Image (cartoon, rainbow over all chains, first blue to last red; front, side, top):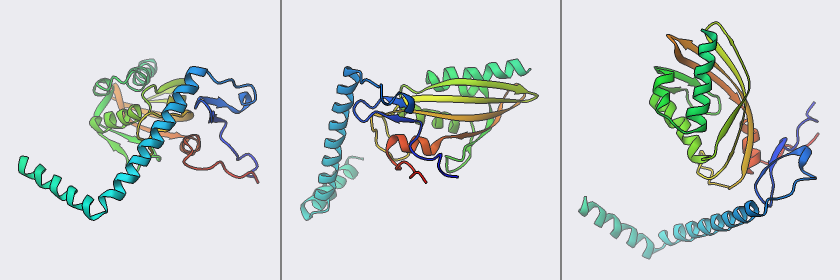
Length: 79
Length: 142
């Protein structure tokens, strides 16, 4: 009874992110501008994610904890 | 009355969902209207909460467009079958933007009172959205 299940009828193209119906998957051709935008977006997202990971790790170090405490103290004084 | 109600629902789709003009919610809904959607944790009650719900979708999918596939009205109810498309460019329920374009379908039923939307029930393809965003894997074929 579950043989209908599989991938969704629409899935984003891995190269350009466009929503492509399963019947058009074989014939889909990426729009070059869209493909470049999507690849650039992916790169930026991965850089942001890497920065967030590194920043989170830094905040757990003694130096990071001190700077977080110091910044919070300044914020409270300014408020 | 049915035609007037259908026009109001079309305005909701065209102006609020598609154009992001959230101020029309005040005009289209009664102040204490309730939206039922199993994809959301709680019912959405009141026009401000409804604006926030629609605004949240539009922040996640700034080019969000809903196409009305079918619209039927009877008595104080209007039913809608719709297809929506948009590009995931902002946070959605904690899922960071993926840049992927999605296509989802759903059905909504609106109840009218004193010429405005008083209540709605929506069921839509949440799992399909999650698959397209890559949050859940495709189901294995059995």
